[in-house]
Every structure is written in C-alpha cells, then in structure tokens.
Amino acid sequence: MFLSKIQASPSLELVYLVLEKKARGEEVISLAVGDPSFQTPKEIIEVAHQSMIAGDVHYVSSYGITDVRKAIRDKVRRKNSIKAEIENCIFLTTKFSVYASLLSISETPFDALIPDPGYFYSEPVILAGGNPIRYKLDNDFSLDLDEIRKKTTSRTKAIFINTPSNPTGKVLESNELQELYDYCQGKGIYIITDEAYEDLVYENKQHFSIGSLEPSPEIMISIFSLSKSYAMTGWRAGYVVAGTKVVSLINKFLEHTVSCFPPFIEKASAYALNNCDNSILEFRRAYKEKRDLLLEKIQAIPELEGNPIEGAFYAFPRYKKSTNSIEFSRTLLEKENVAVLPGISFGPGGENHIRLSFSGSVEDIGEGMERMKRFLARS
Image (cartoon, rainbow, N blue to C red; front, side):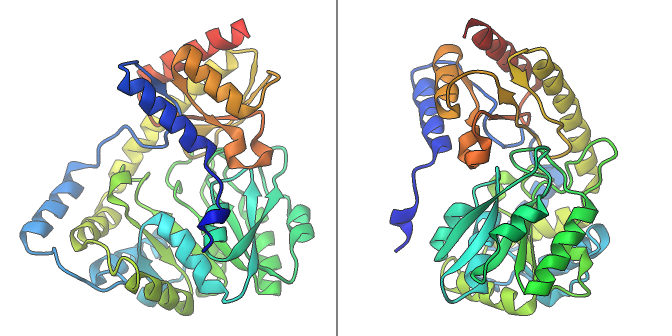
C-alpha cells in the first residue's frame, strides 16, 4: 500500500554502478559499504555449527529462544544499565526492528521525527503508515533540542536518535539525552534509539544508553545489533528492548511475517553476548587505527573539511566543490573507480558531504583516499 511512496535510493544506484564496473572486470575500491572486513569469531561460528548438528533447525518462539532472551537481558543490564526483564526483550534483525517498532506505537497516521542528516529511517516510517519529519542537527551533529521542540506536534508519536551515528560518527552526550528523555516523557512520545554501533567508540568517549534513564522500559524502544560489534552482518542478528506492550505487538508482527528466526543463529548470538567481549576490544583497536589513517588522509586534502569521528566507522566530510553529492560520487566512481556514498542519501542536511567508511582494509583506505586527492586536485 505504501511502497509506491518510497523513492529510489541514491546509495543503491551507486551500488548498481559498482556492480556493473566489477562485472566488466574493473577494480573498484569501496569506501561506501558499512560491512566489517573482519570475519565472525570462529567460536561463534562453532556454536552455530554445533547447534545445527544438535537439531536446532525447527520452529521456535517468535520472541526468541529463552537462552538468547536471557543473554539480552543480562547484557543490557550489565553494559547499558537498562533495567529490563526477559519480557522486555525480543530477538529480530535490526531492519525489522525499526519497522516493527513503528507498527507497535500507533494504529492511526502519525509523525515520527528523524535526524537530518541521519540513517535511513524515513522509509520504515512511511511503510508503517507514518509521516517522517526531519529535525536538523547542530553544526557539530549534536541534538538541537529547540529544533526538536519546534517540530513536535500532537501527531508526533516517536523521535529517532542514533548514537554512535551513521553517517556522522557523532556520539551523543548523556546530558543532551537526559534533556530529550525528560521532554518526551512529559509528552508521552516514544524515543526509538538505534545503538547498532554502541561498542565502537574512541578516545575518552563513552556510549550512553538513554534507556538507562527509565526505572523499567516504557517510552524507550532500544534497538541493538550484533552486526558491527561481532562482525555478524550476514547473520541478521539483533534485538529490541522495550515495554511489554510494544514487545508483544512486535511479536505479533513476527508471527504473521517471518514466524521466527533460525534457532542456531539465536544460540550463537546468546553465546556472543555472554562470552565475546574480548573480540569487541580487538575490533575496536583495529577500527581506531583505520580511523586515524582516514583522518590523516582527509587532513591532507585541502578540498575536504573533516569532522571529528567519535564512534562508528564512518567519516562525513564536507567537500569544497560546486556539484551536488550524487554527481560528486558518480563522477568519482567513473574517473577513479572509488565508491563513496553521497551525503544527500542521509537527508538534505547531508548535501555537500560524502560518507566514507573505514570498515574495509587499510590498503583500500590508503589507496582510495590517494585517488580522491588526485580527483579533487584536478577538479
């Protein structure tokens, strides 16, 4: 019903161009895709393997098996200080989490505020029968509470936040999150918080889960993923922590769509949450080295204006060139075989920016940025 309202993605258009080039045998360096170059730790894979051999290949509860729900509860209590019970936890892939959460909060048309620039939340809002309203971020990509208040109306049912941020790399501070929570609690507005990059923070920054401000989940819908922390993007493993009513409605959505998620993946996810913090530390150290390299390369290009990268694995520099970001990205790909994402993909506030991922290899980061330097010097 709502699919016709969704526009084609500028980022997917670029992906198709990359695939065409590779099909012709051209070597393309991608600084576009947010997929870790690391492999999933072998011990997690082995748990999934043994689980399959043991016969965990049949239907299970749409909520998730007890092992993974307990692991989610224990993890968010331990790491996020969220006061959750098993009844507040449900296992599902992150993309479904956003859509299912929106379906659970309103049975009538609604508005949802989404950050600009920010991740691709507008499409799930539209699919859920809502109207996405963009709120501008401050110049340093922190929250602008005055802007949020200005955009809020009686139709506003939810406000999205994403920290650490894709695409900006911003880590929101606890004081601004406290102010947002107090505002939304007073108005009965849900906060949907995307914390997929919670474990990738650098320097003295610390990730703060806004869900920790509640005595028990009520207006908070906290979305987490194992994709980035454990290099498990292809496993489609994630979870939501929310009030019992929201969790029950999400479960109803799953019952009538995917039924459940593979139990061997849930077993492996429970193991990862309970036992694999050391892998997170190793990944974070490697990402910090790549981040430092990318920052060094950006600073060496006069035509790029960098931004601090506090978390996640993205930079979002502004370029000094009189062309829109789609044309910039397309021309860079055509001339130098380097793929980046146009900033406009993340909202009007991203125009004249590009998103650079440092999730790939050190060699690709170095070579890709040298080609970009050459490209900009010729422009």
